[in-house]
Figure: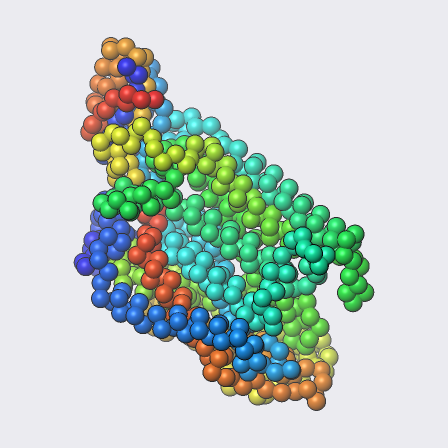
Amino acid sequence: MTGRLLAEFRDPQALKDALGRIKQARHRTLDAFTPYPVEGLVEELAIEASRIRPAMLAGGLLTAALAFGLQWYSAVIDYPINSGGRPPNSWQIFWLVPFEVGIFAAAVCGVVALLRSCGLPSLYHPLFEIPGFERATQDRFFLLADAEPNTEAVNNLREVLESSGAVVVTEVREP
Amino acid sequence: MTAVLEQNVPPPHRWIAASRASDVETTQAVTEPLFAPAGRAWWLALLASLPFVLWFFGSIGWLFYRGIGIWGINSTIVWGVAIANYVWWIGIGNAGTLISAMLLLTRQKWRSSINRFAEAMTLFAVAIAGLMPIVHLGRPIYAYWLAPYPNTMALWPQWRSALVWDFWAIISYLLFSILFWYVSLIPDLATMRDRTSSRAGQLLYGAFALGWRGSATHWYRLQTLHATMAALGVPLVCSVHSIVGLDFAASLMPGWQESIFPPYFVVGAMYSGFAMVIVLALAFRWGLELQAIITRRHFEVMARILLMASIVMGYSYATEWFMGWYGGRHSDRSLVAFEFAGTYAPLFWALLFCNVVLPQTLWFPAVRGSLPALLAIAVAINIGMWLERILIVWNTLSHDYMPSLWRSFHFTFWDWSFLIAPLGLFAFLFLMFVRVVPSISMFDMRELAHRESVA
C-alpha cells in the first residue's frame, strides 16, 4: 500500500476546493493534472520555481561569447582581410552573429532545462495505466494526494476527496 | 463534415462565438478535421497546389543547370525577383512569431485562436525564404562556404559581409521558430495521443508528446519557458528583419543607404505578415469550420493592426522621400523623381495604393466587419508589399550614380516561376499541416473558454 490516491474532478473549482480540504485533513497533495494551466495551482501546490531562465541566460551568453571569439580569432589572427580599409577587429558589426546565435542557443538550453526539470521525455508513466487518465489532456482535472500508508488514513483521504466532488478516486500502486 | 462548435449569431462572447464551449467541444472542434477523412475541398486544393510544387522544384533544377542568367537580371540590375522574394517571404515569416510572441507578452488572450497557424506560417515562409539567397548565388554548390568549418582551403567566412549575417540570422531564426512552435505544441500532441484510435497515431503523437501528462509542475515550467522564449523572440525577429534591411542599408547606393531601413523593414514584415494571417485565418475558418473559434471580432482587431501598420508604412515612405530631398544629394533626389515618374512608376503608384491608400478604408467599421472586403485588402497588401520589395531593388539598381549604366529589368518566364510557384509550395505545406497537427492551440482555447466563462 502506497497511500496515494488519484481523484478525478469535473471542473477546476472542485479540484481547488479539494486542495483546501486535504490540507485541513493533514494529508499531502503531490501534483495536479489538468488539460490547461489552471491559475493558482502553482501556489497551492507550492511548486518550486525552476532554473530554466538562469540556464537560458548562461547558455545564451556562453554561445554568444564563443561566436564573438570565433569571429575575432578568424578575422584578426587567422585570416585577416583588408576589406575597404576596415579594421580587422570590426567589433561593432561582430555583434550581429553572436546576438542571433545567442538567442537560439538560449532557446535550446531552455528546452533542455524544461525537459530535465520535468523528467521528460518519459514515454511511459504508471499514471497512464489508470483508466480515464487520458482525459487529463482533454477535459478532466486530476489530483494526486498522499496519506500515511495505513488503511485508516487512506480511507479518510478517500472520504475527503469524494466529499469534495471527485467523480472517481483510484489507488495508485506504483510510485 | 459539420462544425462541432456551432456558431451563434450574434456572438454571445467576445472571443468565442458560441454560447457554450466546454473542454470536450473545444477539443473536438479542433481535432475533428484531423480524424475525419479529408473532404473534397482538401483534395481539390491538394491537386491544385501539386503542379506548383513540381513547377517550383523543376524551376530550381533548371536554374541550377543553366545558371541565374535565365532570369531577367543583367549586369546593372544584378538583383531581381529572388531577392525581393527573399525579403517578402521572410517578412511573412517574421510576422508569425512576432504576432504570437508580442500578443503573449501583452497578455492578449485572443491570440489562442490564431497563434498556432501563424507560427506554422513562420516555419514554412522562412524555409522558402531561406532558399532564395541560395538560388540567387552564382555558384550555389558553394553555399556551405558561409559556415565556418575547418577546411583544407584555410578559409574563413567574411564576417563583414551582409550575406554571412543573413545566413546566421535565417538559420538561428528558423531553428528558434521550430522550438518556439514545438514547445507550445507538446500539450496538444498529448491530447492527440490520448484521442486517436489508430496505433500509428498513438505511437507518433506519443513519441512527439514526450510523455506529457499535464502535471501542474509541467505546466508551470512550460509557461516559464514559453514566456521567456517569447521575450527573446521579439528582439530576435526585429534583428532578423533589421539584418535583411542592412543587406541594402550597408551599401553605398542611393535609396538604400538609409538608417531608416531596419525599422522600416520590421514594420513592413509585420504588416505583410498580418495580412497573410488574415488570409490564412479566413481559409482555416472556412475549411475547418472554426467559425465559433475564429470570430469576427478577431478579424476586427487584426484589421485595426493593419490600419495602424499602414499608417506607419506611409510615414516611412514619406520619410524616405523627405530625406532624399532634404539630404540634397543629386543622386538621391533624382532617384525619388525616378520612383514617381520613371520606368516603374505605374508599379510604384500601385504600391502606394495597395499599402497606404486602400487600407485607410479600414477606418470604417463596416469595412472591418466585412470578411470579403478584408480578404481583398489583405491580398492587396501582400501584393503591395511584394511590389515594395521588388521596387526597392529595381529603382536603385536601374537609377544608379552612372547614367550610362541605366537599364531596366524585364521579366522572363523563370522570374514568374520563382514568383508564383513558391505560393503553391506554401499552400501545399499548409494542406499537409492541417491534416497532421491541431491548427488551433487547444489548451489555450480551453483556458480562454474558462476565462470567458463559456466552458
